[in-house]
Every structure is written in C-alpha cells, then in structure tokens.
Image (tube, rainbow, N blue to C red):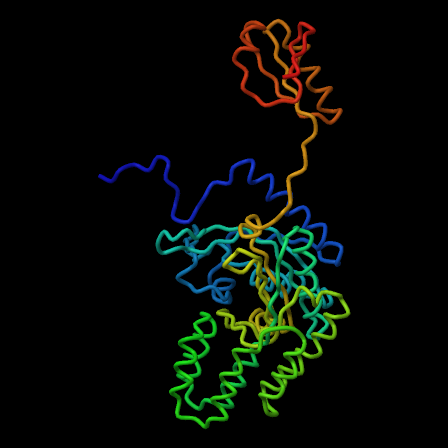
Length: 393
C-alpha cells in the first residue's frame, strides 16, 4: 500500500502565500490599468476546453497538456495557453463583431511536467491579442504596449529583442540546400549554441560566400543600424522581404518613442512554429529566461473557420515578480478589537462601523483583558479592548 500523501502537491504545482499574492495582484492591477488605456478589453475563458478543438489547435505539445475525460466521454484539457481559446471565441461568439478586436487576459495556464526541475505546471500570465490587423503598425502596437507594460511594472533594466521568422528561414534557404542541415542550424540558433553553429557552418560543402553570410548572421544584433547590414546579406527573396518589414516596423516603433528599449535580433528563433512574421522576446537584467514572448500568428484563426491576421504577447508573472521594483502599497489602517462575551454586540457593531469607514478590522473574543494582551499575535496598527483602554503596540 502506497504511503498517503499529506503535505505533498502534484508535480509542478505550488502554493502562493498571502504576501506574494498581494504583490502579484498589485502588479496585475498596474498592468490592467496600462493595457486598458490602449483600448483592450478583458476576457475570461474556461479552465477546461475540448481537446479536439482548442487542444488540437494549440501550439503546446499534446504530451505537455493535462488531459481528462468528462462525464460524456469527451477528452478535455486544462487550458495550455490563452491565445487558442481566444481564437475560438473570436471565431464563434464574436464571429459578427467587426475586426480588429483587442482583448487581454490575466489568468492561469497549465503545462504538464515530466519530472521535477523547478518548473511550474501552473503559472499566471497577463497577455494581449490584437486580432484582425495584418499591418506593421499592429506589430508596432503590440511591441510598444509590451514596453509600456514593463515600464508600468517598474522593471529596472530590460530589453525587448525583435526579429522576423522569415529572415533566418530565407537566409538558410538561400545558402544551405540540405533541409536537415537547415533544421540543425535553426536549433543551434534557438539554443544560443553559437559554437555548435559555427562548427557546423565551417564544415558545410557550400561556397565561401554563403559561409560568410551564415557567420555574419550571428552579428546581426543591435540597433537600427543592423537593418542595412541584414539587407546586404540577402537577395530578392523571403529574407529580403523580412528585412523590409523590420525596416518599416522600426520606423513605427521610433514614432512610439520606444526604440531605446529594443534590440533588433535577426537570428531570433522561436520554438513555437505558429509564428508567421515578427517575433519578439523581453529580457530583464539578472534573469536568464524571457519575461515575455510574442509575435504575429496569421494562421491560427483559420483553424476555427474565421481566417484573420493576429499578433500579441504574454507576460510571465512569476518571472516578472522576480525583477520588478514595485512595492505593495501600505494597506488601510488595521485594527484589532478584543472583547469579552458580554461585550460581543458592542464590539461587533464598532468593528462594522470602522470597516465602513475604510479600516481593516479583526475581532477576537477572550475571557478577560489580561488574556487578550498577553496572548495576542495578530499584527495591527491599533489595538482596542472595550473597557475603553487602547494599546497602540
């Protein structure tokens, strides 16, 4: 017989204690205020979705989903992301709502973990989706809003790296004929394994000019001056069009006044294969993993019968909590009222009066005043006992 589980939690699950949750809720409030000012409306979708709809369409791998059977025998999943459920809503309940549609969410999502590695299986996100606008200005809006969100969250030092999925794909197609080798080079770039990338490039049976272009790709990270360098590495194909898109995007981002917080990264590779154009990731100092990720995904809505371009991003709240300089504001006055059984009605009436005036009030019944002051442990700015005495400790 297996040992009963008493204090253990399922793999990857965690408790969020009051002090941490207070900080998270305050951050969410700041982000909500920022996002709504840009015209986005909040949406909530079910925690459970059908696997055959949202699960199949989700970019999350099936083995990373929590799957259950409902009473009717249908396979359902705990939502592995929010982008796919929102695509379902926009294609069904919102099918007659004209585009573009701006929505945001603040909720939890679930990803199953195979082994304990310090990774959460349930985590909180704040994200936005701009659906129905395929212009560069829509990409610029999403990136600029991400910058303003990180500013609102008081992240002291951050950069958002911006790239385009077609640049690397196009350059590899122009220089490396073997698709398997292309895939390996993409993986090296995604893993930031530049030693492995260079070693593979050096051994390829391709013209030296192509080898030079592949090596130069690693140096295409920086400001707007990198656009010209990227343009020089391409021919009139997919990669060249990606550079032209980024050039237009940079102009729009400059108009927002956010380019000092950005970094162009032409070798930015996402492991999510549903991105179709501009991609971006946000990083903070002293944090090894991205704070946020996003980009353009123009094919997802078509899987639900309403083809439409879309872009958006998601902020990872647990990582944001590690780097924010935000402090939880002081709560309103907290009062502890003690009373003996014969003073109950008077004490509770006074407690309610103080609550209506805006104070936080905790009450405790004791047998006598001495017991109250000797044994109290509650934290309070003001302590009262209904004999008329007050203790400001």
